[in-house]
Amino acid sequence: MKRTIISLLGIILFMSAYQPSYAGDYGEDYYGFNWCIKARTQNYYSSILAIPILYLNAGLAYLTQGDYDEDMWIPYDVPIYNIFKVRKGGEKLDVNDGRMYGYKAKDMFSHIETGLRFGWQWSETPIGIFGELNYRFRRFSLEWEEGTGETKYKIHSFEPGIGARVSPLFLLYRNYEWCPIVEVATYYVNNFRLSGGFNGESKEINNGWRYSYGVGATFGDDDQSLSLLVGLEVDDFDLFNQDYSYGSSIPYKDVTTFSRRIFLKVNLNF
Image 1 (spheres, rainbow, N blue to C red):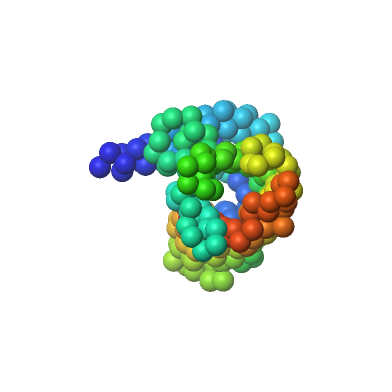
Image 2: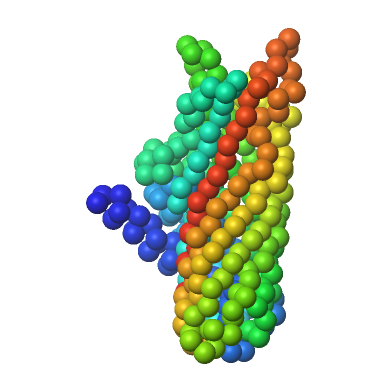
């Protein structure tokens, strides 16, 4: 019950952040280019980061649209479950990458992402396209050998991406006020800075591709609409460089990683 209450509070706080609309609106006169600033985290307590986004996007919406109440979105866009596993020689290692409901700094700020999302959609087409420019910070620690103590990692990355939201049966929205939606996207993860590790060198870790898949539905009419999307993000690369050498050793030899995130997007247009 306690976690349920905390989750609801986190959703309410994130949904309080007004943002300009982007690809996915089906309003009667909607078309063209739109954008918004985004921020998300895997910890509910650090959802306080949505507060400055609230005022920033509301101000930008007023400057670009001239009215707070014109084509406004209330978004909720935050990972709700993070899965990160590390194996060495097939043996699973314990990883401390922050608790979703933890209230300590190492939990609240273990994973933060912010960036710019921009897109295009016309009301009479089944496809909206969007792009993102994201900065991500993540921190975690693990013990490579028993009794040697934890090795800490702080990784900074730049992650540009492009995607599409498709409504193959979008005519249902006109006739029945709902339609299914499918969203796919791909991002290139450029891990440009590493603190910690064995020697604090960025070449200790790899860059690679991340893929995102989501399914959901849009409900409503030309005046108000609600879209729900549940999805999965997949890192298609091993985080650690197995060929990296440190002195006479190759610390990441036979090390593999598994990284997935389940997310929820809720958008209310009015």
